[in-house]
Image (cartoon, rainbow, N blue to C red; front, top):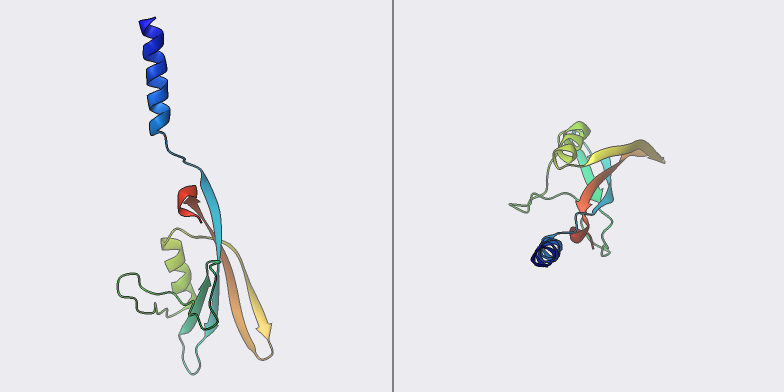
Length: 115
């Protein structure tokens, strides 16, 4: 009887401390286009958040709050890779005489971090 009680006690205490380890795949879109009269590029990132009409969706440095500046598209892609994002698809979009490149990324997040 003592052994049965001990087993039940251990099983219930282990389940009380277990955490939800479910991971959820999230996506984001990075859009790169050339700056006017410059060799540098502008990068906009869409994480799927709700945006206001005049919202700014450019990447910012988390410490300083300043805009992240990228010299090339490869610089931006390397940054996303360093943040744990994995490239899924890439393609150009032509609108009139201007063009941009769209890159889709995915990343696994703990379910508790996703709203």
